[in-house]
Picture 1 (cartoon, rainbow, N blue to C red):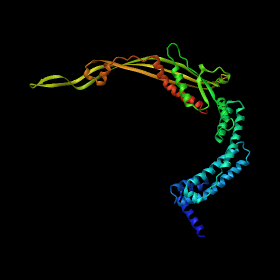
Picture 2: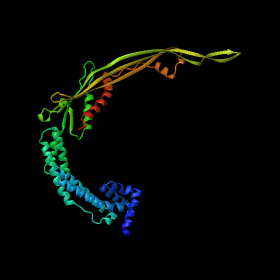
Picture 3: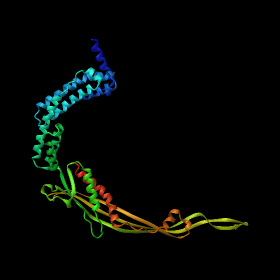
Picture 4: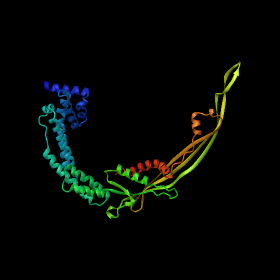
Length: 379
């Protein structure tokens, strides 16, 4: 009677204090596995923690009971991959036992935690067989989507039982059949400007392949598209500069009068003494500015092998290069240092057409990359 009262009193203390760090919160929410694991971790740090002791003694049998119940439910179901759930629960049971065995105080409280190694091994083999058959069935459908599903099944089968049957070969086969091949057509440029867009498409191709590395999608230059029927692309990503111009000149000139007060302009004799004479000086400042405007529109289109348009978006970019110089008439002392520097400057030579082309495509590049990434995010 005294022991029962003490246990009840301890439980009340835990309830009042919360005992979150010792697993009580998870216990209260019915997550017995989490509560058990948290309690053991707490006892590893502090074996005298009575809250954690209480939680462990309460939750381990409940967590074990819950796992065995879930196993029975899975075994009685008609799901084609029900052994995956069985594996999951046996792994949790063994994880609890392993954790308890590594904590002296926990093994003192739970002297013989149950282990299910043979049962887990058998369940893993059966789970591997189930998803292996699902993978074979999906792969035999012959579509890219089902091949992708098969790839996931075979990966899971191998995780259950490494090297199960010929699963490693089937993983590669499913990877091949489930990989979306996208041929990228480079944008063409007008011979009038003598510029190349190769840098644009080459960098874009490299960046998107890097981003999608390890995933079931591959981009390559359409000019190098395989001729083998089994290697032909599933889609075409067409890039084209629909409209662009380079080197449009816009000149502007502005003349203003500038002045500065209290400038020494000479000396005078006053009452027999020489004194400085101050006055306002003026000048007419002419500022010249030359701008070279470049810009264009890139279309990004995705077609399937039947030439059906699947996606389309246009992106614009512009770049303005400028140079300024000036001259003046009047008193130089009216000018600021910045204005003097401007007047001592000659107009700069503009960049080449290729450099101007590169500059206006920079904002287009980032937009196009983001768009392509979103199109194929599912892969």
